[in-house]
Amino acid sequence: MKYEFILSNQNSGSISAWCRVLDVSRQGFYSWCKRPMSPREQSNQHLDRKIKDIFERHKARYGAPRITEELNADGESVSQNRVVRRMKALHLRAKQAKKFKVTTDSQHNKPVAPNHLAQDFTATYPNEKWVSDITYCWTQSGWLYLAVVMDLFSRKIIGWSMSNRMKKELVCDALIMALWRRSFPKKVIVHSDRGSQYCSKKYQKLLSDNYMRCSMSGKGNCYDNSAMESFFHSLKVECLHDEYFLTREDARQTLFDYIETYYNPERRHSTNQYLSPDEFELNYENAS
Image (cartoon, helix red, strand yellow):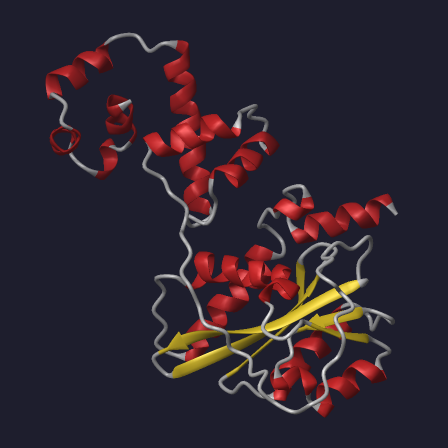
């Protein structure tokens, strides 16, 4: 397995260096190279190239489950356990999570709505249930706040807004985008936490004017909006970790690219049978 790794990575370092790092002899490596490759070794080399290509193309965002789905979709019949073993041999590891703080302010005296969602994050058709929340990104110019609206049917981000201030306009603008993109549907359950932005008169009027049903999480209960928390987890692990933003505009462009050119059209989602949100909705439309 060490020899396979050296062969796969000979372009990123000298063979002598790799042999020293992995504590194997150069003579042993060259002897291994001269002997005929078994069918299994040939298969592993072919699979390793494909795994590395998918891993690099998705910028280290995909772990073994999604890489397995990508391989199978590409005609490679391979198990997840084998992909795990090959990734371990190639020293490939998907980006890992860090902890982040809560952003919204629920310490206020404004009216709150009941929890109509009740932790049921399933939806049988588009525009049945939407969820919304706010997160943030640090830049050298200060904080950039992001509000998003997700359709639970496909986990697609249908509305978003960014601002250097966490005001009611932030969540209102995200909801307005969602309304326009979805052609102003009626009777949608729109769920959020109890943040002051979501309890504001402006946001509540926007909901009522468009015949939408407001739903809010219980106080301090992150599980009541776990689908949204899951998206923010993915965004921060796959998009923001280890990034350095000089300006808010740099961060805006990166967040836009992640949502509109990667997450919605391309990123495989486990809830969608590992189809991207756009693909999942297209399949629904074609079957309707």
